[in-house]
Length: 637
Picture 1 (cartoon, one colour):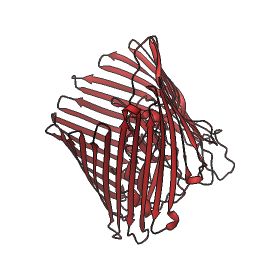
Picture 2 (cartoon, rainbow, N blue to C red):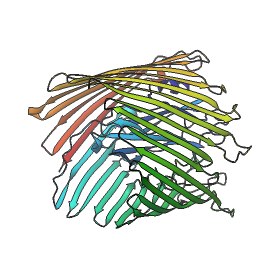
Picture 3 (spheres, rainbow, N blue to C red):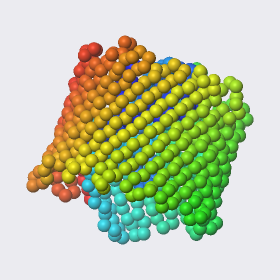
Picture 4 (cartoon, helix red, strand yellow):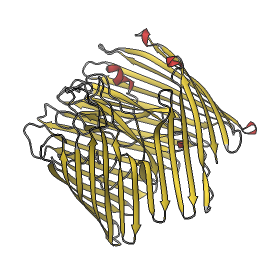
């Protein structure tokens, strides 16, 4: 398990995450690799946590899942869910556990920045949720269609890839399409990402149609609806939604599946499919005041999987949430938002038990000025409140969240943040009470219009009652420097992370990370980028030290007259550890070459080859060499 810890020491962030009852998880690192990632390639969402609870996580009782989002203006839009990962190992209290969730970036996402977040679910409850993190997809030129009464345009790509890892027997093809159209006063956007393999000829990872008409907006497929923060928010759905507006009244109705079914197997009890339906009505009473009424129903389909043994304890559940939300804008720069929701939930639909009733409320105030912006919220979610369609709403918890940003000049920005919560509101002696606080301060400074300095300091503290169950602290300091140099750019980064567990359930760790990279324009035809990352983790308990080094390089050469371009990129990484229990000494070399031929202004053909070689000096059985091939055809119209 220590190998997993050390392999993630190069990751760039550390946040503590919420926990329930006797199941607690402390987030150490999460990052996407590689970053940036080529469109059509696979990015791995790497996450490292520590079981800071008093009970072990038994295999089959927990799993990992992730979500991918796009950025549209200031809003996040749900794009896709990763496949869930159910690890085949038990995680003892105080032990560390790592996971890698794979996501294949659609070919048509070139030039965009994507966000992701990762969840850890234990016994059907989400005990860890990371913040939104980002990664870059290499840019691709896209020409928007010319406005017309009728117009159809976009791009379609078909790709094929295979590897020698299993004797070239695991080929995969992908069809991706991004189509926009306009019919008189209406327009539509259609996105799809279909995966084809021998065993599964068509797997629709992404299917989304948005139709914008004068009478409303119709969305079907993989939608990301949002009603209110406490009723339905932050939950991807495969379904359909309709939004309509007339005068001061607007409404939204939706229905779909929010959790796909999973058949039980030797490592997991499975999951029922979960469906959600609901809606909201919004009435604008005045230009500065609107009132929202909403209702959401979520229910498991107990016929969606087959349970063939009485030892399986999986039970179908449901929740009903309904309430009001009001928004008031006053004094030009202030906004007050108030929400109150009631819920009725059943943990076992087959049992005659009476449904549990709960309540939740949230008050939020925002201020936006020329030099200052601020936001503060206070929410209380009762012990019996349940909202299956809003996974970030955790029952039995009171949360305070504050943010302050200062803009004294156009060359500097200061930001401050505080997030704290306390659970076990009824002070149940059978439960562990947890108090968590996260404070942060950050500054962005631009010197002489070019040089950019970013610095931040973050402190996470989590303490249980009794403290012997949970008492830890994580300090994270970040510093980065960006320096343009003519057509070139240089970047330097430093991060120091200190984790201290006063209960001694897990080892205290000090991690330092230094990175340096640059992008260089050597000629009109030749450009390159290179970077180096060095990280070191010291275990304060057994005095072991783990070191990880990574060297990357990228070369791009274009031949405009022949309508061709070549790209070569490589990564060399090494990992060493003198841990007495889990020593490590291995290295990996990855080399890839792609050739792009622009057959015409509308079509392009790509062919790529690559190799990944691993050398393990301690365990020679881990040595491997894998070859990869890729072909892709893009057509724009």
